Length: 109
Image 1 (tube, rainbow, N blue to C red):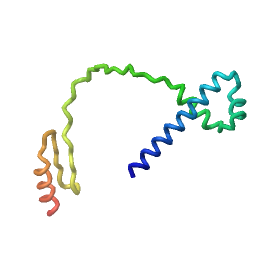
Image 2 (cartoon, helix red, strand yellow):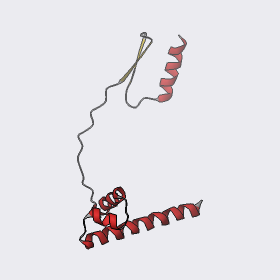
Image 3 (cartoon, helix red, strand yellow):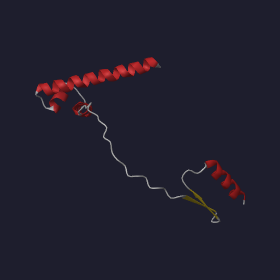
Image 4 (cartoon, one colour):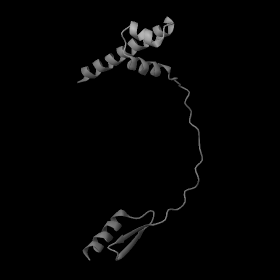
């Protein structure tokens, strides 16, 4: 299993080198993209894909910017209406076990 993963990684690396080399040679050739593709029997769509991939700027200048968030408003309680008979309001910090027990009692009625 590990060998398959290594082989796939090697294949990807070789494919990347192949296209990187062709994109560089095309730029240096002075030929149009179509002429270069035709002369080298290259797929138009793969050429376009890899050309775009190599044109993307690689930036290592990543920085974190602090932002200030507004104070959280206290949330309104959650209202549960059971069978149009019972209304249970649950506010922040409730005990889930207690709510479960209340719902079990209400469900029996």
